[in-house]
Length: 212
Image (cartoon, rainbow, N blue to C red; front, side, top):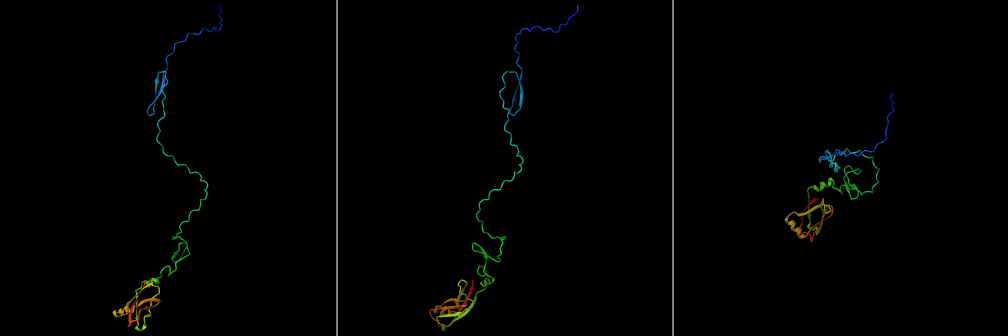
């Protein structure tokens, strides 16, 4: 008898089978971190989740400073400030001037100093440095109680020179004192002797003149 191929024959779905038994719990890899920051792994067959672990390490050391950045663009010019106080009025070796010679100041301005007035000339210095001079005079018995005699070198200014009157001898000294003479310079190159009375005899006196 010939064989007939009917293909795959599918029957109706059967009933659901019974539930199988629960399988064993699988292994879990649990991480752990030590004080140095190393992470290790361990197999854990438990069913509880692992505890929370902070894997953030401690603050690291401060790093080296970086290279400075480039300068920024120049800012806009600021407003002009108020006028400052006047500086000291000083004169130095770099001060320009059209004045020659020695300078003098009056607390406000500077001007040329006048020779002989603001400073001593060479002639004045030499005159004051010169040795004292001596002039010999004679007061006459016939000249009265007031006698004016020529005496070269005397000046009226009492601060410009020192004048000393010295009777020549003891007899001259006694007669000079007895007459009570007082000497004064009332005009240049002259000396006036004023006494209480006329001398009883001629009196020789040496007049010393010292410029100061």
